[in-house]
Length: 357
Image (cartoon, rainbow, N blue to C red; front, side, top):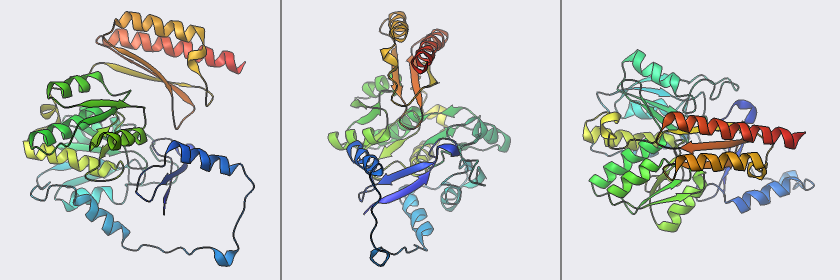
């Protein structure tokens, strides 16, 4: 009927929470989540103990899942000869992540595989990929793969430690599928997707559309369009011919399949995609805070947009998982983008303090 996951997702363990999945294996719509949250405020009603269901352990779940993941990798391909660093973020993938790649033939150096209940995402994983980059260089690996705590975000590193985000990894997969005639429809991104990806897909004649930030909205857009591939620059990637939801192990296999087929590094395979400088600043705010209600914030945004002169973007949005406002600025000049992002963030911070006072 449903699935329930207890996880800190990509956050510190203090932000541990609950994630629900429908019977179709997808995250619940916003309206259903709001119903559940409203019910939590109502008096607790329980059934008699004799009428409750029973728990059963699925003893072969691990083996089933490993085979499911491996089944998404081209059967005529292998990972033999590749050395991979796999960072499991002290989270959900710590037992099975390395095994999937080992069973496909890779030599695996596993890190972030000793969870203690408090070290999830702590200086490791897809949200802290510098650890992965260092390990790849240290071990002389061909590629590095990093998951987040609940195993739906992916970051990767090339042999030289260069890091690649979700936009670049999505491009690698889409490029490969386009080349072999396997791409069905267009590609779905979000408001945060780097404009360079949209521009490059256009050059290839591939349709692109943006959803609100959040993989559930990417999924909704894919269903609406009848497409299969989409994702976020944070590393949430979706391939509906492989799975009903985001799975970083499967996403990594799709990237590796493209690279093995091409016989190239990540850098070489994605060299046509030159991302625009993009700066993201998180500003702590009370949940539900409306940053744009502040006059100084609106002024800072107007100044930034005038400076970018149509060759960049400004986006302010509340996080869906943390009490922060995310300030994103994208443009052609890295120094200018950083300066503008810092100015807007300062205005948002000042507005939040004024509201709190």
